[in-house]
Image (cartoon, rainbow, N blue to C red):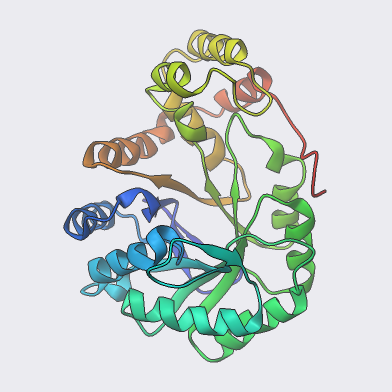
Length: 306
């Protein structure tokens, strides 16, 4: 597993990130899956305070307590909730960020968070206040660095200009190439590392894509109709027969120069093992595949939040 620098920080993360949201609520199972990923070279775990209303952070904290120094933990803030209540509201205020970080530290059973992310954001937020809160937490040693999770170019641009973020998490895949037009260039220009989520487009680019398409994809996906997706699968298979759809999907996002790591989720050991194995195999794909993938898929632009 390759490790890459996160922005201009002194943090290095593996080029594959375990997204912990899908681990479920079985703490023992979650710990086993996290241990497996760490033993395979993954050193970056992504969680959020909102996942299962704090329970996911507790599972991650329990799993890493015996090897904390070997793990880079990302968690997120901005969704204001109270434990025990399945409800929340958006709150990027300094007061809440200072309150929430301490709750996350307690649930994670640690005295610092490696990467703290704003879990969304709009231009209507008190952006200066939000940035000030993160900078204070960094100065106090409660977090090592911070970033933002967003698919809004206008919000990403504001944080790139006005803050010292080292990392941006955004959705990016062969079926959602919108970040190539706006978000990824902003990150490159400002030395911000990109951590990609959704590389398999809700399973439509997995090795079970046909099954997922028939179950969930009757209305298509973003700019693609059901029939267009069917045709794309055929065209990819004909053009690049030596690689599986999932290999091509992981290869495409991982090879963009702005991308530092790709997030994958897993709700079972089978998925976990398969995703790690597929990631390790993408090195076998030649550079000639990249322009073919670009030619066969749609380049797109964000219609909103530009």
